[in-house]
Image (cartoon, rainbow, N blue to C red; front, top):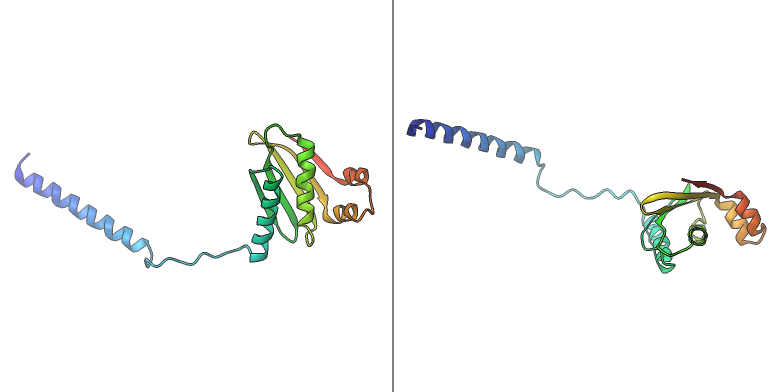
Length: 148
């Protein structure tokens, strides 16, 4: 290539690079970090952390919890070597203890990262069981159980 052609190519590349720099700098915003808009209240975060801690104390290390006015939702991976029904009952008890202002309790159990079973019960039914107004058999009959 001739020296003149090389200079023109380098000039065009420099213009493209400068244009890209200006474009990226202008779309990047003001450079000031924007505050994170927290959508979960401090009370909800505390309740979620309490549920996760209680599950971890019972041997469930891989879990997610969401405590809200509508429901307490727990999803967890069944620990290896544990009984699925016993762990589901334990998780239901943990969710029930956090459901003082919630309407429903939903516990989703995973095994090997695949959904295994989901239990749903009203918080009122769980509270009635805890107050010994209904038996364990009556509570079990009110739990909607879905196997996948």
